[in-house]
Amino acid sequence: MTSTLRVLLGERWPEPADTHWVVIDDTGQVSNSGHGEPRNWPITDRTEVILHGPQTSWLNVKVPKAGEREQALALGFALEEQMVREADSQHATPTLRESESWHVIVVSRDRLKRLTTQFEVISRPLDAAYSILQTLPYEPDAWSVGVDEQGVVVRAGEHAGWVEDCPIDAEVPCLLALAITDAREAASLPSRILTYTQDNTVVSTWGQTIGMTLEPGERWAWYEIGTEANDLLHGEFLPRHRRKVWQRALRPAVITLAFILAIHLLLGTGYALWRRAELTQIGSSMEKLMRTVLPNEPIADPVAQIKRELNTQRSTHGRLADNAALTLIADFAAAMGPEAENAIQGLRYQDGGLDITLAPERGDIAAIKPRLEARGLSVTPRDGPGHIVIRRAL
Image (cartoon, rainbow, N blue to C red; front, side):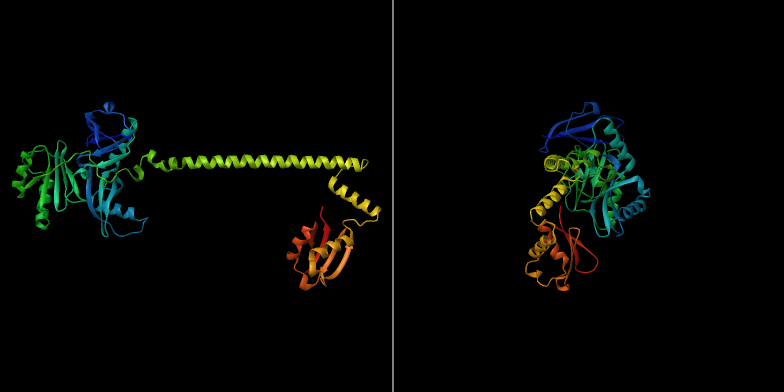
């Protein structure tokens, strides 16, 4: 079961440090709530914050079309022109990208950096951060106005809004009054204004001032985040533990692969050692045989020496050695098969090697070589086409 601590942060937090908090279970229900300092917050699996007050602004900025790499730079220039601030000082989160404009939630980069650092210091690294603007309910052709102890939150559309830090009294908040005036002049007044507050007597006087009826909304809770809400922690502010999610996901596969490679390496090494021991045993047996057959001859190459002695014994008993000219010619003819007829233009035997010049139509050495090697013959190409020397391979 996963639990999430969601904390409401005003623009002056951590001065004072106490604030509202709730604990959300994995079904999305509030399991605990309270008001206090970080040391009194309950321990949970995740920690998220809601930024209240004028810390965030929801803007509609005209962003010129640009390539994928230049898009962030174009957005920065557009923000700098509209906000009259350095683009590098702001962190923007797009909520809607249209053909000629973007809707973005903007927060001070320094403020967000301080918050993430402060939560790491108290051993509660942030998993997500949201703007209070996206907690207000949205209804088509209506503005939503939320009033609480930290100010007035206005959502003037699906992707527009602002927060005004002002005293709550009979006077209409300045930014809200200006927005109503501008909308009236542009003939874009909403059909309704929904208010979310625990004291409707105060905001009821606002309707008389702006000339509109304010309707009470059904429900607004600062901690309720819809699926459409945009996490402000992205890019350079993406938490370190979230950046390594893909590594953790791949860890079982990597461990399994490493285990398989280790087993493969172990088996391969064992097989190589076994083959080496087998070759050593064969060499030892050949050496013993050599000492038995040729007790007075120094051992240099047991295989070649035994083979040479075998050919000597064959000659002594009237039999052809395996490197004799006739033996090599017979093996060559057997390897060539029917193609041996009229295949030889030149033939010379010297020092156990048969020097052969093949006819042009039979001179495909690449095709002949595998068949000769299969009969224990080594093939060495010489100068000129179809010119080879075959010997008995050791």
